[in-house]
Length: 88
Image (cartoon, rainbow, N blue to C red):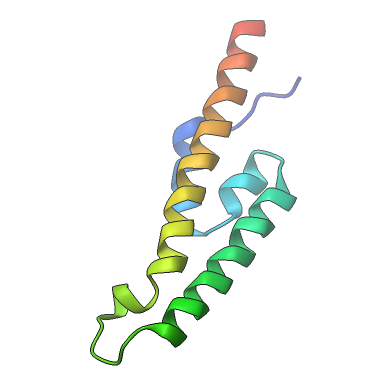
């Protein structure tokens, strides 16, 4: 088994570029699914939010999915790294 990326690097990638943390963990389809739902829910909340709502409120659905994808990518990266470290 090849050495996986360190979990902190996966976390940094997931924060900077949504979905790339999952690609770094060799799960590109999962990253694309998170990206799709980020765009979908961001657009939905933008269309349904009242005009006086802040920018964060308008894109709250997309930001929520982004936050969940960050946690998920870190979790997967951490598990892969610890399994590799235990085997080595």
